Length: 299
Length: 225
Image 1: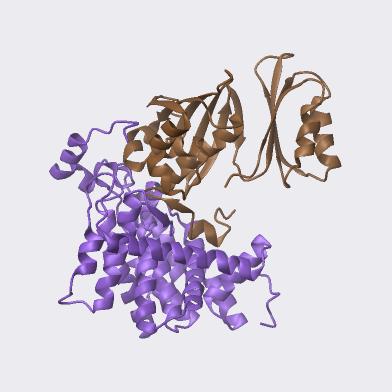
Image 2: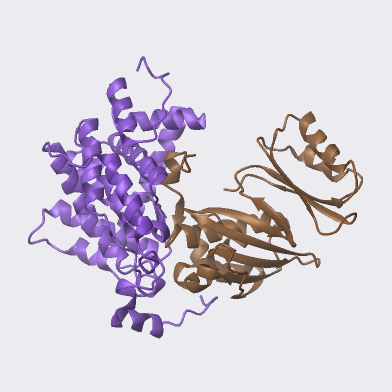
């Protein structure tokens, strides 16, 4: 920690990685030092603020497992509960519970329950559930989990500043894609991955999300959002595992982020959170729109 | 240049769902408007524009604005029940639609707020993404308030010297002015000023500003949470 006075500034993943290697610490520690320097708040204060977010994430994961939760639009109901109570035939039980927890968080959000945006509300299930799954496998301590959250925040900040985290501007890849990349990197460091492996985990996950459209049925944050969070939480863990195995992305992380930005800008607006394309205008999607006259001010 | 400057812009806000722009942003617009009014309105007319209108109910935008007007935070579990809370606390409201024109951000609302003693203000607020908001109009005056800085608002006679006295009061107390905006509708009548400071403004400073000759109304808005 002798070099903790080094000024921490990073605009790209390459710069973030170089700082970690130069300082001989993880991506999480570099991101934490960045926050300390930017905010002027002490290390403990910032650490505890992140820990508080983890405990809210845990509550949201439990909420939909305790009892079935139904979204405002009534398009999703009790999927987290259903998966949580189910004995898996194919997946490792912890992975099945990871999938259950991702849906639980998003159903909680869809029902106006309390969540932590990560980076958005629509993608809020991926980071907590995949962190939970990995920490179960690894017997991680709460401090290790909090450090991993700083990893995800550092990666997320670079993606948000160099691309977008708004579905209205970049489609779902800007929300779920970014979230999956954040989670993959976080889990990779949690499992002991090097900073170089962490950024590769992120790149692998984001690359596999490019082109993902935002076409929410009926204008609700329910279909396809809730189940997509579940499937991508497993992808985040897979990407981390691949990076730990020494597999890297042929296209470097910063170039993947640039590609995400380019694709988002070229994407037609009907696939950017307008409910004017894709699943939203299928016959079933249209029926939802018609059968649910959205009356303002009805409780 | 970087828009996101804190880890908690990415891991956060703590909020009730389902949308950071349409729910958390709506709550914060309501909270912001409430502080400008100076308390809970007796009656609120809430007019939604653009995307706020199109996906508002599905995203809880209507409930969010009502919750914010009642003083709730983005993470308050009662946001969902805000209509019932309003009834209990004696705030009435109507929700309708408005077309503010193509130049206004699609996630915007116009709020007409009335107090029990008959005061009335009109505010336009915008949710610019990720739960961040801006107030763009107060009583027909163009403004640009982010809530990121402690802010003082004055309505005063449009005559020389008042602005200097107000900034002098702040300077004497070590408050640096970060942003400032003065607007008026007609020369020599009434002017509307907003000052965003780098530091919290002590109550005594606000009282001193209110006592300046020619100041008709003073309102202090702490940093928006």
